[in-house]
Image (cartoon, rainbow, N blue to C red; front, side):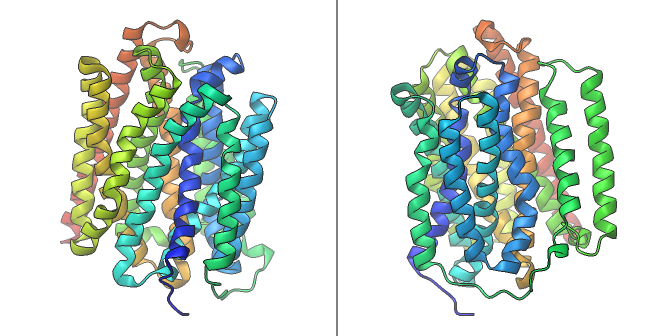
Length: 460
């Protein structure tokens, strides 16, 4: 197939990445507002974020396979259409649970955008420019993460929370045009047969992830017998899923993929990194608004500082990966993230907003370096006929981390605060929760760095 270097093709992939990342970040700043608008708890409002992530995580591997079967461009167009209509449904939802359901459908569209943009890079640019293109997509992801809080804060304060969803509609319409006009039609090598999609595996994965997430969010900060039962169901679900994947003819995830030590280690580290980054998005708004007393607009502006730094370093990070060994850049990024996570546990409590900004400015460039290097390493090793599947598995690990960040780290924050009703908690209690959460994040990043060093030692 002909290689495409069309800048408009890359623009479409970048816009797809922007939409998916904006879908996460623009909502996080609204969490305190939604708890008040629907008169509900933090644990309930978490599901506005979690339903989106859960939907992405459950379906993303199947989407990668469908992209390989039907063609990347066709599936990408379907994803944009679903995302756009779901955004409209979110914007007009009259109830919290209606919003959560609409967000799940929005996540389905986002799963398609996320999984297939990475797979499409190899069709859109030359091999020598793959790292730079990954850096560009990383930049757009960072821009979406940066733009979301600021744009969301302004929209919520002046026009109401519904506009944070309705603003997605014009972006979706523009992307439909770009995909139709500029993306190349990819060949399909496999004739579609319904039995080639592991629907049972998809359902088991969905139920397992739902059990895991419920176990970490219900109970309003406490852990009782129901949480234990849900965790037990999670373990059982994992066992059933692994067994089914080993015995079905067309598994959702080929277990043989994980015999590749480089891929397996990259997936584990990727999930750890995503856990920490999601913790900043979930915990940050409550700390800034309730401990430091900032309004929605200023909360959004402060939360955007780190991703703005990440956006500025995205393309340079990709170029660094093109010129240096990706494995070395992975470890460099992780080391910077260790420093940034521990900085978030210390600096804000001593220097307030300034300390928060400094810590984020350390953490996010490390994240950008890691993402560019890790994505390049994984996708360059992938066979051509499995790029959609490998991209899906890579994003599965990322979204498992995001769910863990939203649920487990959110639960840790609530536990450290000592109350599920943050509105009545004292500022020092919110600060205590912030410190505890990012001490745990720093430890998690240290483990990721150690795992990466062990991988390199075994490879020598």
